[in-house]
Image (cartoon, rainbow, N blue to C red; front, side, top):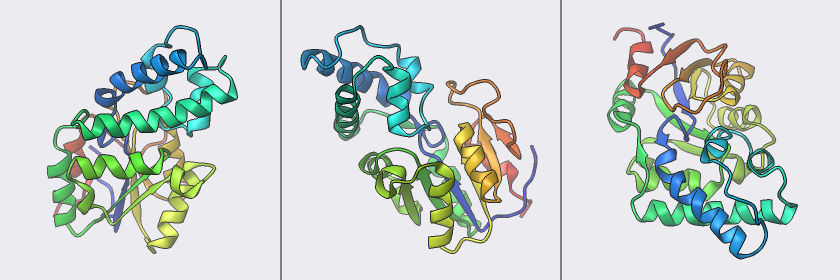
Length: 224
């Protein structure tokens, strides 16, 4: 495992990094398309969930263009509303889980004096709701989402976070090419997460280190 210089902060993606999104989305995905058909906004069969999982990390408007390319703008807009509504409902019911070792690893990072943040291209209530429901919200100094700030890319979202919290050195930790790009274009070290199972080939190219389980992140730290 590559050891990286000790950072002042670590910025995490949410889906596929901290949160096992498929444990929530399998139900949500089905419900979204059942409702779209019921409302006669999209009458074709439900697209494979792999299309949705493979699009995570993209901005929502781009996700629906990929998952439902033949859907109308009205269907895409309604899918956004339903996705958020059903995600929050299912989270509240206890569906969805963190990856093994997330809480323990985050606590260990805090124990080294490292500041923790989340930066996600998702909608604000979801991005803030997952850590809250799963009992890790208090470990993060800031939780930033594209939904809250209307940023055009993850590069912009991370830059805004770095500036606001006056972070001078950080790692960007995530599972998608958008995370690698956000880290590299902001001068950060990047740790790629290769355990979600729905990334595309070459997605983590350019990462400074790649981990295959969340607790391996601690092996990237310089020895205490």
